[in-house]
Length: 239
Image (cartoon, rainbow, N blue to C red):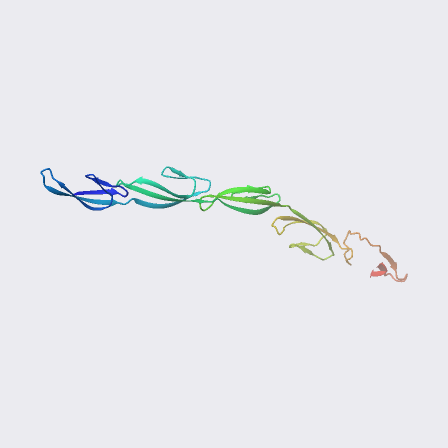
């Protein structure tokens, strides 16, 4: 009796006869002493080992496996000899991951800078960053930056005695020129200039040292009275 194993696709030859299928075979033969005898062959088939494995690689790069280099996606095959001497076939499915891209529009205030992904920018314009996406491949970011110019706002106000003008939480009770720094809707600083003057139309606005731009006349009602009348445009202001 003979026990043999063959790999899938191979054949075993015994006494000039070829066998490629598993099973038991019998060959009659005559022994040297002239007697009939039977030769029994037990043939076992070892199937090839097949394995499918999937990989991915980034666009514009190459993928290497077992010393072989691949640059395009698809299905490939590698053949090895296993421990039993038969072929081991490795099926490889390769897919290419395209580089991702995105656009970021942002702005910053005049005289300031902006930091994006750890990089600082001080000038407006278009910039490009290459980051690593979750897939491990490149992610291209196009950045459009705009600089917002600082603003200057001037406002005029008139003030009477004992009045208070409140602007952006600040109270003003005296004439003069004042400056505030406030934030506009874009979050950038705006210089707010406030010019406050005395209101010439307010009665009782006269302050010590002020010169009013009016012509007043003084007159006595009678020589017999010590009353003095002050009038303006024939309107008696006080007496």
